[in-house]
Image (tube, rainbow, N blue to C red):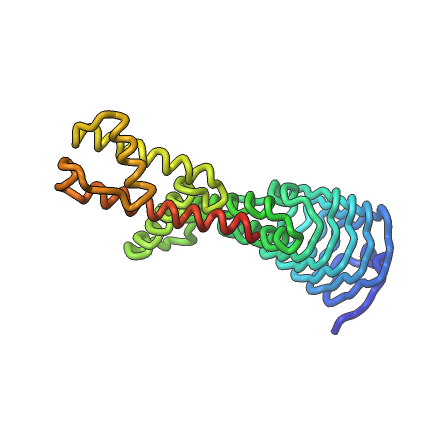
Length: 279
């Protein structure tokens, strides 16, 4: 059963469970050494408040105003924030495990600096920050968070591959290692080839390296001049190419590979541009 109390009563007791605070305005108040569990705060203004060593676990915070608030050593595990304002709020040594945000005004970087060493938990927190950024229309922030989320996922998979984040004596089985290696390969390729569709410059660079590499092959294998080898590589990469010259009448494999890579490049470029335009 939910019991409604006043914010001023919070400091009177160490542990609070199943409580509700709503429609109150309190400014520059300090809350210290309080444990709140499965509670709800609704339309509460706590501008400039200071929270020290507070545990706010598995609770729901809706339409609350925390502008300029300071959170020191606060444990937010499992708490849901909806429509809250954390503008200019400061977080120091806080815990955000399994926290969710939606349409909240906040500085994502101030939360990120509180992340711990658990890469999979960090990935989940970054995912929630991404969802919140999208709900607020912050597309550029979402792009940066995607790269950070992928980074934590890569770190987690690397540690898991070498059994460095497993409990007890659990060992990763061979089939699971193959699956991890495939996922790691996909993540690293996605990063280096096109930056997960975010960094188009990487995709252009990859295309340039591919064209130059095949031009070197044509120059060595077919004894083409430098200009002819570059132009041939460019044509094979960007179109279906041509195979009319005598030195191209045999061994179609190299040309086929470059043509395939060119088709993949066009598909990735179209996907990245579509994402930029429609977001």
